[in-house]
Image 1 (cartoon, rainbow, N blue to C red):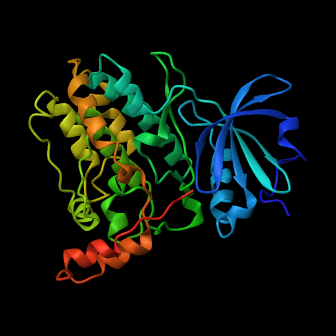
Image 2: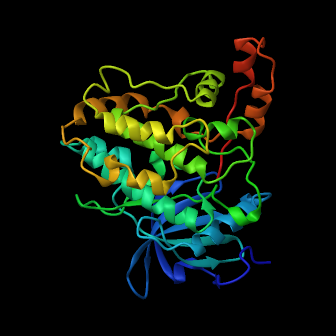
Length: 334
């Protein structure tokens, strides 16, 4: 029985269609490979998914495919076609070659608020498009922001729709995402909507201007406490050379109350994005130093387990820190 209900192409051997080349990445039950279409010679990225490993995750995969089929935007990764064999599913994606956002910042010699503003503007435009389509990404973070090409003027592309959800599928209440980027309402076990993506954009903007995240602690419970209270600072000396306009922009996105939080539309109209308030002072040395210090840590890339968090949050405040740490954990996502 096929995993994808329509529009997929059956094949006995994917290598008859694509020359499968080196591995570009790997997940818990899939890998992404560089491939070349044997007929057109076009290079693509192929997500190879092992059906046997998909047990109990079929709905998540079908949801990701449904979302990818629905969207077409210059700043969002494009699903070109799907192939299926008896044992594997292949999602053929447009190849992006420019690398991850933070890696590119490290490689630069010059980096300014204006550069950060340009990146965030592109992300906001793409997320506004998703929201207009009734889609919530739910896992926006720097690792999912890629440069389309290696060239200096390359556009940014949003990738990884494994946790995305269409709002017409019902109220969103599942706690999911990556710890440092999740909004307070997720941790408070409330139903939520597209506002969670706007919060994540605020976290990303903060990181792009100083090189470290607004919410951080080695202890998960302390991290979640900071997020729920929307408790963050613009620390000296890292923020001394950053404009008040940038801080104001971030403040409107990192609003605890989702009803007061900027929408994408409102954020795009802020002068730090649409005007000329983003400074052109070179902040590369300071930001890159902090990126190297803070983003080598594996905890920033782990997914988080809703059950573990909810169990933690429902514990009485007198629970010991040791007990909290023992029960802390993380689960892998697609």
